[in-house]
Image (cartoon, rainbow, N blue to C red; front, side, top):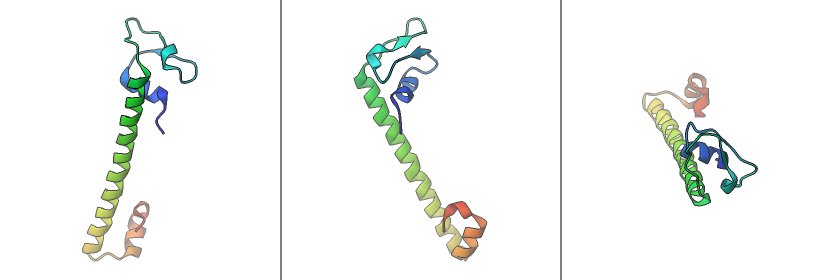
Length: 90
């Protein structure tokens, strides 16, 4: 799960800041000349980061499926695949 803090760090990498709770308007910037954020920006970034996570999970699942299919095409049985690559879940 992507947090408000994750989104802020993504939007303002390398800047030092602190906040109480999830109140974006109350961020205290410890780095000079930091541009403030709006809740709209942070919410959009949370959605973007969550989408990236979902896409990575889907890509990993697709790679696993492809690896299992490839091993099967080479004549490996599910038992052989699960011994060689227990994390694939054949």
